[in-house]
Amino acid sequence: MNSSTIKLPELCLLFATELEANSFVEKLNINFSSDKYKYGLHEKFSLVIAGMGKVNAACATMWVIDCGAKKIINAGIAGALNESLELFSLYKPGLVKDLDLLNFTIPQLKTGESSITLGTVGSPLKGGSLKNQLVDQADLIDMEGFAIAKVSEQLGVSCTFIKVVSDYCMNNSSDEIIKNLPKLSEKLADELILFLNL
Image 1 (tube, one colour):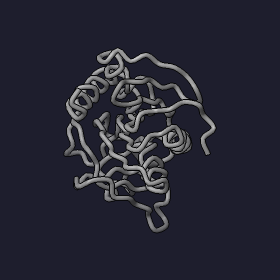
Image 2 (tube, rainbow, N blue to C red):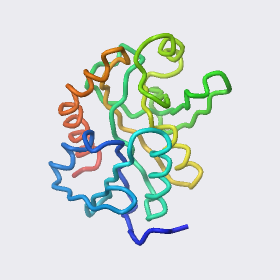
Image 3 (tube, rainbow, N blue to C red):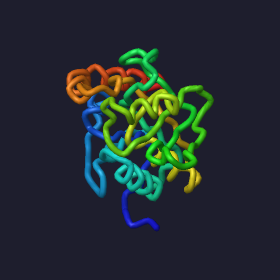
């Protein structure tokens, strides 16, 4: 299966976008290279930019596993459906659901002990009737999580999520996320440094 000559460390940090990873990259002075994906190497881990959405996330997850990853941490932003979750707060969801299959039996995977549920959707959620349908299904929403969890499970690799609340899935969410990204990235960086004992 290995079509890449890249050998990655066993631990991989997988981000959807560089903007989410920026603070962590700067604090640890990680330099990027490119193969199928943009990646950086540290003595303890690799950091890979997957791209947004489930297809990019699934393909990047397969690639990092193909290159040697045995444990994946998906770090990034997530919208909050549960409005008791504070903006800029950090969570490690214990359950991930594919919410694009809302009218069927919803696929879900256990990823930890936390009671926080992460739902994955195919496009940004900006209020409306769909948000109302999803409120009872998940606390947080992203566009990559379930795909990463599913590929990891299928290929026998452990997967952890670290998510920071970026918005409340409203009509103005895109503007709010862009405005908040530097602080969101900083929060993720500080949490990852603690989590990884760097």
